[in-house]
Length: 111
Image (cartoon, rainbow, N blue to C red; front, top):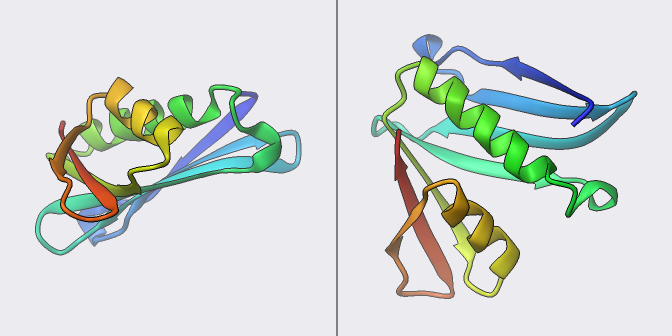
């Protein structure tokens, strides 16, 4: 990934953000958003021109490392069960399925 920027302050109730850049173009963005229950929800977006280049993995690993440094304990996400690439990515970084009752999976990671 050519460049990344970190931002956010959980002590102020902010989310944490990582943005991947390729020159002046945003290639991807990952965020941890506080849910009000001492956990954070993960959301990630990778521009279609940059998918399957390892940017999603790098964004998540960078963001989770940033979260650990900020004393975040629990991260969760939801993903559509048919989205195998995303499910595999999340499992590869340590997320486990917590709820699989609907068309979406809820996955959780303790940092």
